[in-house]
Length: 154
Ligand code: FES
Ligand code: FES
Image 1 (spheres, rainbow, N blue to C red):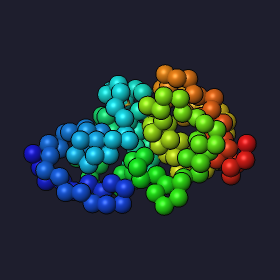
Image 2: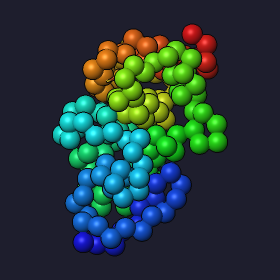
Image 3: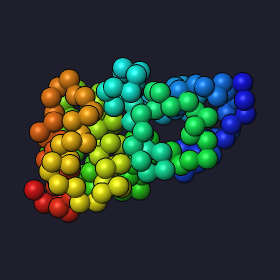
């Protein structure tokens, strides 16, 4: 066990924890941030994606110790005072179906726009097809990200 301080959604948290614990379990079980989902556990599906210093990262295979010193953003921290433009587009285009993959989809899209505010359609598809959706919402996801890039117009 080790004493670690983790920055999540703008707040510092002091934790007494095994430093090898995957970040997803720290978020869900220790900080009660259950918006981040667990699915494959092997960095394949993207359900557990969070932002680490603004970049999309899969939290199921990231030891919590690797996140110390970084600013972590979960779906609960995206658009706190006002909905993030991606969230507005998601709602307008009714993207989710069952919803399970959607936090990971949104955080992946947010990471893409942080890195590249004006991705092409091909770049959107390449990034987002890496996050699995069993309900097949890919077309609506692509449309919503493209709408956000264009400033809310489809
Ligand atoms: S649960 Fe992390 S990538 Fe699937
Ligand atoms: S909305 Fe159901 S898995 Fe993506």
